[in-house]
Length: 220
Ligand code: ADP
Image (cartoon, rainbow, N blue to C red; front, side, top):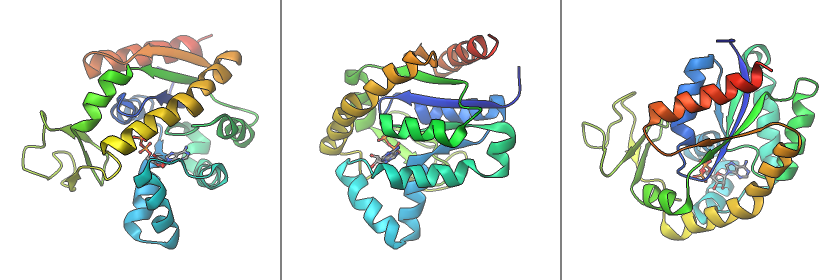
């Protein structure tokens, strides 16, 4: 294993990006940077920015590109990411954001953008029952709840039903994904940076597929 990595994980809401990013972050020893988690932390702090972000997130809308790019620019400038790299989860989501990512990371760029493939029908089913820890982001479901009611097995945080995991907001996010994020795959593909991985099946098997794809591309 080559330590450090510069990765982008793409995939529909509910494809398992959060779960797989946590695992890849341990495997390659790089920080997992989730724009959704950063925004939800701002919402919990109740800042003016957090209040505005909450309205857009609850509606299932995307935040303006310049706002999100500013957040990522600041985060990628810290020592840990400079030294070891990063796994980006939820960014970029538009072609403009991808162009900005390349500008920010120039000249090193990224190793690979991974497309975690799971169909819309499957993710719709998963999202309806999704529960998530507000502190560490561990995912649960109605079928696989935490051991003690609403307390996270991993960190003891509160396990909640996200306010944007309603049928309306989920469908809106999935539509936006098709419109804004799918063209992004072609954008990465055109630059020889895309690898698609089947996201169905046991999470351990999916992790193994991702590691194989990443190491294959990085070993070139
Ligand atoms: P999901 O993948 O289920 O939509 P996330 O946790 O990644 O959830 O993001 C939650 C919300 O945060 C999004 O619906 C959007 O409002 C906002 N958001 C996150 N990342 C971005 C981004 N890169 N650009 C614009 N908005 C974003």
